[in-house]
Image (spheres, rainbow, N blue to C red):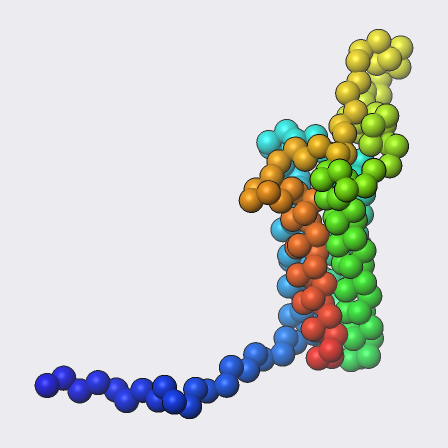
Length: 180
C-alpha cells in the first residue's frame, strides 16, 4: 500500500497577495508602457499599419509615463523620500488614466459610438515629404481615418488594447502608491 500525504481540504489557507513595493510598481508600469509602445512601433514600422492622428495622441502619455516610472523606481531604490515616491506614483497613475481615456475615446470612434475630431479625416499624414513642396502637392495624400480599426484581435482594436494595458499599468502604479 502506497502512503499518500494527508491533504486538508476542510480548512483552506487564505490567499493573501503580497502588496507590491513602490519601486517594483514604478518599474512594472514603465516596462508595461514601454512594451506597449514598442508594440505600436512594430505595427507601424514593421507591419506598415499607418497610425491615425488619434493613435499618435495616445502615445503622448507614454512619453511622460515611461521616464517618470523609471525615475520613480530609481529614486525609490536609492531610499528616496517615501512621500515623494507615493505622490509620484499617484501622478504616474493619473497620467495612465489619461491614456485609458484616450484609448476608450478612440475605440468609441472606431465603433462609431461617437464622432472623432475633424483632424482624423482631413489631416496630412506625418510622412508627408519635406523637400519640393510643389511636387508634394501634386501627389495624392491619403489621410488615415480614425474611425476604421486597422487591426483587431478578439474584436478589440489596438486602441482598445491601449486602454486595457494603460488601465493595468495605472492599477499597478496606484497599488504601489498605496504601499509607499
